[in-house]
Length: 96
Image (tube, rainbow, N blue to C red; front, side):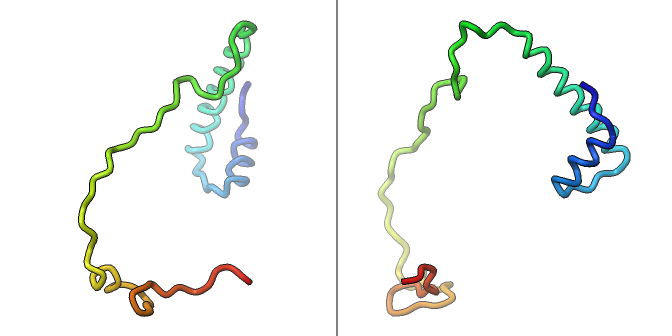
């Protein structure tokens, strides 16, 4: 499927992206190639392939918790725009 310059300019307008003439030509070619690749993939027989959302197993990557001393309270509050006693003071964001 060939993407025209007009279509690339329309997509750029929707995305609020400014493009030079050279970029429009390059993107027209690249987007056309991407769509051609999808056309090839449409021809692959997937009748015996179960639907999946992930191609690899999901697993969490976590590090071990390491206990470390906290910063002194005065250091923590030293750059606070507003503080009250030993707390950060912030404007309320929820209505009652």
